[in-house]
Structures are given as structure tokens and as C-alpha cells.
Length: 336
Image 1 (cartoon, rainbow, N blue to C red):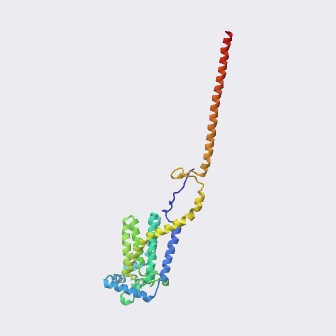
Image 2: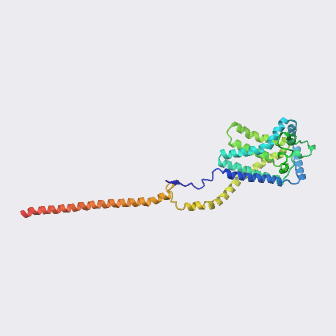
Image 3: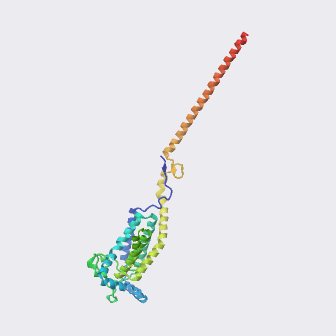
């Protein structure tokens, strides 16, 4: 039975396998978490950066975190849900959307969005390292900010160390505020839902989720407005570098692929040329072709010999008839 041979490059657009994707994402997230810890820097430097950002915003009247923090502090019905959103959605909704993209969307769309998220996270890590920043909630109380995570800590699993569970505050870097990847990742989720969601509610969530997270990070005094703006800029840079990063990984894959396909090429060395555009004759059928041709030649030779024998017999009969006729003619002649 004929078998088809896949064309070159058929696997390039295939969906990435989950057992290769999960380790990749886990490694990048582990590097991100470890980098946050290593980028703690000097506390006094972080405080200076935080105060510089706050004073700059006050001069431009864009210190939106101040009135929002007053609102969240005075109203528990707003502050408690905001704390839950800050402590959970960042780590739950983002991977959920990533899994949805992997399962339901085209492989090319998933590859770009996944690479965009990872590259942006690495850029954010560079920002934490170069510019450690004290968030508003850790500034001196004279600046008027209240840490809502500490105020409403009895309602959740977190303590006074941002969104870290109680007793694990030493495992997080509280001065990794610039840029705000809470806002950056929320923007990524919004773009993914807007581009690939189909229902009206998906579009509403795509717009509402990034805006809500932006208000949450400022109202809980975890970020300045400029931190949120820097998170948006970080995602913009990540989108610009995602394409080159994909091309680079594809080039590396192409360089490594010939070494992996060499055994396959050696096994297919005996396969004959194409019979059609997409099919090739198998080796077993190739062995049958000479035998069939040999049987056809023998049959043709036998038929030809039979035809020649018939002609010879006819010729012999004719000659005997001619002799008889001559003899018959000769007898009357002799009688005459």
C-alpha cells in the first residue's frame, strides 16, 4: 500500500507540546522570582527613588494613588476585594489565559503571545534590578499612605508583606515596584482576550480587567501611577522584541534540526522517487515491479512462439497440398 511522506517544514506550525511548554514557563517564572530577591538593593536607595517618583507626580498633579488609597482605606467593601484581587488574580488569571490560548487558538498566535509575556517579564526584571523602588505603602506615615494589605490582613492569607502569605514575607522583594508587572500582565491578558475572544463579555473583560488592576495597585498603595505607566511601556517593548525573539529561536531550531533528522534521512535512503506529488512507491512494491515485468516478457515470448508455430504448420500443409496436387496432375498426364 502506498505511503505518504510529509513535506519539509510541515511541523513548523504545529502546536507546542505541553511537556515542553510547562518547563519553559516554570524556568522563566523561577528566574523572575529569584531575580526579584537578588535585586533588593539598598533600602535607602529604594526609598529615595520612591520619594522622587511621588514628588514628580505631585508637581504634575498625577499622583492618583493618594485619593484612591484614601477611598480603599475608608471603605472595606472596596478595600477587601481589591486586596484579594491584588493577591490572587496576577497568579491565577494570567496562566489560565495562557492555557486557554494553548488549547484553543492557533499555534502561531499562542507562540507570539507566550513569547511576548516571557520577554516582557525579563524586561521587568531588568527594571527591578536597575531601579529598586519603595512602594507608597512603605513610605513614612507622614506621606499619608495606608497599607491596605496590612489593614485587612485578617480577611485573607496575606500579612503585612504585600501579597506574600503570612510568614513568607522574606521570600519576596517588596521594593520591586518599578515597573508594575501586575498592570503589565493584566494588559497582556486584556489584549489576548480582545484579539481572540468572541463573546461580548470577553470584550468587556478585556477592557475592564487591565483598568481594574491599575486602580487596585494604586488604591492598595502598592504602586505609583508612574509604576503602572512603566508596566504598560514594558509590555510595549516586549511586543516589539517578541518577533525577533521568535525568529532567533526558529533559527536555532533550524540549525539543530539536521542533526536530529539525519537518522530519518538514512532510513529513507532506499525509498524511490515520487510517483505523484504527495505519494511515493514503497520498497516492497518496488521489488514487485521487475517480477511483473519479467512475467509480462515471458508471456509475450510464449505467445510469439505459438504464432510462429502456427504459421509454420500452415506453410507445411500448403506444401504438402501442393505436392499432392502436382502428383494428381501428373497422373492424368501420364494416362494421357
